[in-house]
Image (tube, helix red, strand yellow):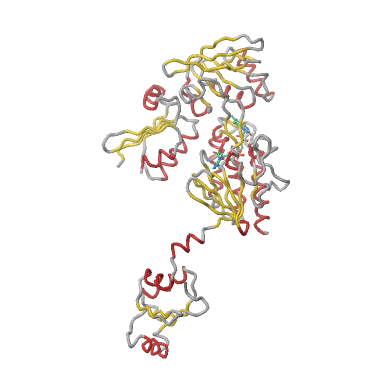
Length: 400
Length: 82
Ligand SMILES: Cc1cc2nc3c(=O)[nH]c(=O)nc-3n(C[C@H](O)[C@H](O)[C@H](O)COP(=O)(O)OP(=O)(O)OC[C@H]3O[C@@H](n4cnc5c(N)ncnc54)[C@H](O)[C@@H]3O)c2cc1C
């Protein structure tokens, strides 16, 4: 290694490209040097000629130990200095102001706020930009759209607005977060490591499996978790929908536009909003939907790679079979927090991320917003509100 | 080398949109078969993939070998169009 306390002298001239190259390399390596233009300083030129035995070649570089290099290549200069630019660049990994994990409404909103404040923001999304909202057909309760808005449209607008102010989106899955010296967070991703001063976790949740025989066997061949993706394959066919919460009811209603009939299989009772309940009642009276309450789904059965029926059990333990062509499962959501289980970030019993009043997790400078946050209300309007709050808290954190 | 890329989609499918965006970013031209507008081609999509889902991306190489990718799966899509 070079002795940085002694100066390196570079003799050169402004018209000389190799002089620019050598000076650029030293600058990139963060090594200070004195530059002398021999055209402008005749005394210095004489000194250079003395040192080089009259060889009038530039750049001439005098190292602290007295060694003289004339017109060195970058490799020769690096070797003489005992350094390597590539290695130095790796040692100095780029540090983002904030990285947001997940590209749903919470992150996209937070990114609109941070980038408008000139906080450099990178969003990492493993699936669909827009998150769960993009997978939802029509959103009726998001304020500002009196006729409702399709999930795809809302997602598109949020993405464009975030990108307009300079947010970057990368298609990448985060697999762990750790904290390093100087409060820097290291994110391991499927595409290498990334560093950030602050992090927003907004990974939402994914559909739960019901864990019955036939479910994985017929996955995507008759068993589905996304009505807006796969509903179109069931035009004029019979479907069973498993689940009784808001999302199951909403998805069943969406599927009526394709299916000839839907059996809604509800383990206990329907737990959906009054508006949705009314819509279901209407379709029941039209004969489009049959609701089976207190009903367990025991198995999905088929032949020749096709689903043919579901085996169910009613409240009095009577078993029966329903003929269907496909099954859509909406039995709730599980938090996307598996990548956090080994970190110091605290999760609640179900796996949602715990935060304080500032939406900050147990890891300093790591915030959480939207569906992934313990206590969240699982609505787009709330996720968007939390995204805005988190952005303001992140700004405050970065200002230190 | 690619000969052609065809994507089977529906109007409401967000993952289809992601595949289309990805191909556009990579500068890959594709044909789209919208199954809402062409319901008669559903069985073709099903036969190609063995699945009742979209997106289905069919990548045909210059030697006429085909690769069929079910869903938004960058781990398979990226090498297939490389
Ligand atoms: C069927 C259904 C219908 C709904 N209808 C409505 C409605 O009508 N009105 C309403 O207000 N709300 C509705 N919701 C709820 C709404 O979709 C959510 O509240 C909202 O999308 C939450 O936003 P979010 O940004 O917190 O998370 P999400 O939208 O879930 O986004 C999280 C994103 O993070 C990504 N991700 C996860 N893990 C990682 C990782 N490790 N690395 C990188 N990326 C990752 C995911 O792929 C996802 O895109 C509905 C939900 C469902 C399931």
